[in-house]
Image 1 (tube, rainbow, N blue to C red):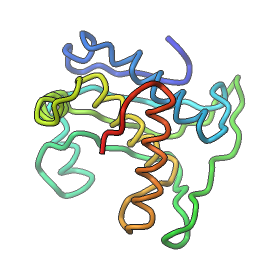
Image 2 (tube, rainbow, N blue to C red; image 1 turned 60 degrees about the horizontal axis):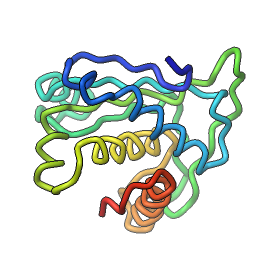
Image 3 (cartoon, rainbow, N blue to C red; image 1 turned 135 degrees about the horizontal axis):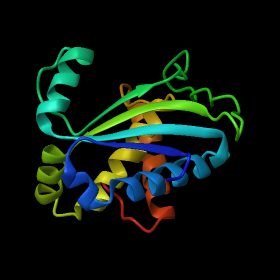
Length: 167
């Protein structure tokens, strides 16, 4: 396993999809797009089901329903005001990489959304990992200007690995 991504599989369907490879690809493309050295950071990605993510969503966001992806930044890198760039994390060390945060994905919701959106599940999941990692890096989509910046970055990152615009 690559040190950049620590993958926790709670639902075997994620292993069948190749979550570890998708997570590594998405995280590598995201960090590269932001000029962050791949060997200085680590990220945990958990593949679970709707029941587990609904529990997490209730616990951390007060919303007892399933969602596609949740993220927990290790450090608050969000800007002080809307429209500002997030603060990039300090450099880690290849011997002791800096943890960026945790991401959880719900298989059932992701699979349903992929079918509804008529896109391959692997592409949809890759997009959600990029999205979740950007949240860990301080990006958000609360304000229109920030949403445009984040979505534009997602499109650019996905294009760099040959995936089409998810929007």
